[in-house]
Length: 424
Ligand SMILES: Nc1nc2c(c(=O)[nH]1)N[C@H]1C(S)=C(S)[C@@H](COP(=O)(O)OP(=O)(O)OC[C@H]3O[C@@H](n4cnc5c(N)ncnc54)[C@H](O)[C@@H]3O)O[C@H]1N2
Ligand code: MOO
Image (tube, rainbow, N blue to C red; front, side, top):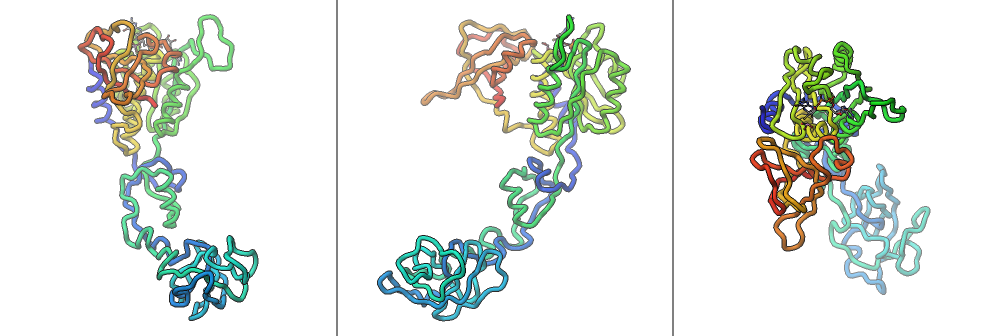
């Protein structure tokens, strides 16, 4: 029997980060940058106004008040995007909008609210539409540089904008766009093919014949792969026939960086995944010291060595196995640390009416509902949801945590401190 930790270590030894490719920004969302990105041209690229107002020379507005305003000649109107700039000489001002380049000669911007807005009346609350008037009265002084965002104040040219290894979230993608980068080198999202096996499986929406059930695993596992950041393809369930399964796998390998199958790995007469792959070099079928998820297959398939996870068919077993083994592998392939910040492990106290039983020598993963620590309490609590049966999908759907019972515990008393994986 392999321990959970040995199996995961073997997987992480076998999988490799995917080779980097250049991707357009929005396709690179959530991906890991593989090269440093430096600031090629300063951000912002020119001194610009942070206010709608008037660009002035500081000496012209020194000591002014509403009662004794400066009256300045308006020499132009500078909108954001203007390239043709007027020069502001002594006694002059240029009307200017937020984001517009500061015209030569101007040293500061007076917000329109500190002026008459060129109307000859009292303080303006906004700019009048249309062309500016010939004069503006300025009611308050400004200091040099006031309301000006200097060139390079966000990111100076030559600075490191984003180091290799950065995960590209919305702010990072925004920065790359601001720097003028249309595409960046990243590790791509792994492409995952998810395939259920079992002659009893019927697609949701189809009526059930006697003895048959709906295929739920391929939906849960495909969604889990997407949630792990992969591009996931769900394949229609394959009946229990080794030749068909081999043919489907061969077809699917062309678009897969990783393959997940469910079912057919136990010791039954129709355990087709095992039958189809057991002699395939590289795929090894093991028994793990865990519950659920005891029978597992893992290895590298085909000439390209595509990691294949043959997960057990019970719905809870396959989902728990995905969380514990496939998700870390996908993260490693995407260049992320296998240790998953989105699946934190916390310690919590068990809340239960009676002691819980756990199989000897196997690490058990019960489904639970976690409650964070109350004020003044060092630990949160976790209550079991449903029993230990690996067919209990409805209970899994109500749970938000996996409760880890160590191998050496066969009875877990209420109040016991345990590790909990938060599923989020
Ligand atoms: N004699 C033994 N029998 C079993 C053992 C054992 O050690 N000795 N192990 C049990 C354990 S533990 C597990 S887990 C299962 C694993 O079985 P398989 O991976 O071969 O899975 P199947 O037999 O194909 O299916 C098991 C169960 O799950 C249902 N299933 C399968 N696929 C789906 C799907 N896509 N959607 C919904 N439900 C699915 C299937 O109908 C079965 O009920 O073996 C035990 N047996
Ligand atoms: O290991 Mo099975 O996954 O217990 O149900």
